[in-house]
Amino acid sequence: MPEEEKLVNYYSCSYWKGKVPRQGWVYLSINHLCFYSFLMGREAKLVIRWVDITQLEKNATLLFPDMIKVSTRSSEHFFSVFLNISETFKLMEQLANIAMRQLLDNEGFEQDRSLPKLKKKSPKKVSALKRDLDARAKSERYRALFRLPKDEKLDGHTDCTLWTPFNKMHILGQMFVSTNYICFTSKEENLCSLIIPLREVTIVEKADSSSVLPSPLSISTKNRMTFLFANLKDRDFLVQRISDFLQQTTSKIYLEKNISGSYVSSDDEVFTRSSSLISASPHKSLSSESEGERQFNLNDNGIPTATQALMTMYRRRSPEEFNPKLAKEFLKEQAWKIHFAEYGQGVCMYRTEKTRDLVLKGIPESMRGELWLLFSGRY
Image 1 (tube, rainbow, N blue to C red):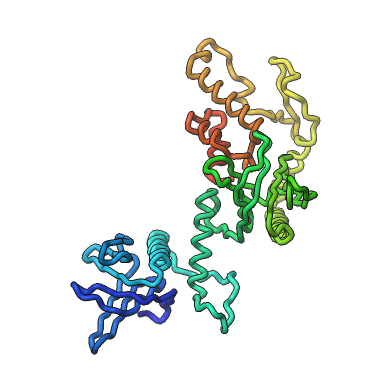
Image 2: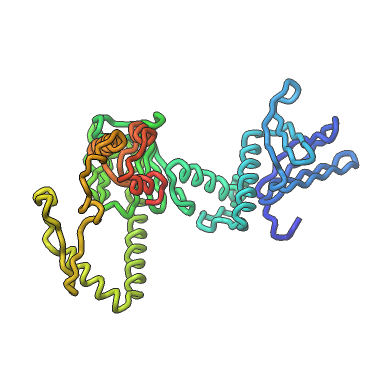
């Protein structure tokens, strides 16, 4: 083995070499699956790279109810008599998946240094790498469930209830807290889920407890939506963790603004000033204007700047427009507008089974960009 190879864990088991079982130890490292046995003067060794494994199976037969089959392109290997086959098989799957991703991404394995170090006199002999892999597996499931960025790390999760104003119910589920997001998913599949980026959060406060609503927590966002969670086991600790992450997020945003501001040229400053004049001008409602009127603002150079897209402002109302296809698009738009009014709009909206049904029915052309960014996780 290379000197840099890291052992994750090892387990007692039997390896079937032909029709004879060899009792020994299976060693699981970052890049290899190894077996070693020395019994009655006979030595047995096996070394398989994770990238060479094509299939992992957990089989159960009458003779051997607990058996793991490891397949490569050229051979098959059988291991049995495990003390904890579920834990062993789960770790094998994790290591094989990591090896495949490394092969595709062409990146090496790096241990997560953010995890707390184990004490030397720890009663449980669990390696730091094993804890690292377990934490990574949880974060991967969390990111896949809510379609979050690949560098997002799960900090923790807890059972709770969420008040849903659209059906006036308290829904049982789980709250997940990570570095940049607060998420919720219901216990009942597809009933309701939430994704709240911390950059959108304005207020996190503890509400008054009652017999109906024990340990409530209120979270308000920039788009004036308020989410009410309750039945939180350790509310004080949760609020402290969210506050810490909020402080980090605020610091990041402030730092990014300062960095981006330091690179602004003099031409950009002129453009920014002229843009501020446009945004500061009195905003008139388009509905109050007649169709013949157009809304313009003047910048410093006296050049008219439209506040709407030209296609929208100069759209022609020809008889060809009133066809079945456009009527269908109009109905889709209205359905989404009604949905937004009931469940909220933007990244913090309540995502329910109705949301999925609307996506399956089709997204209108006018909302395709916004909704693609929303449901693909790009926001």
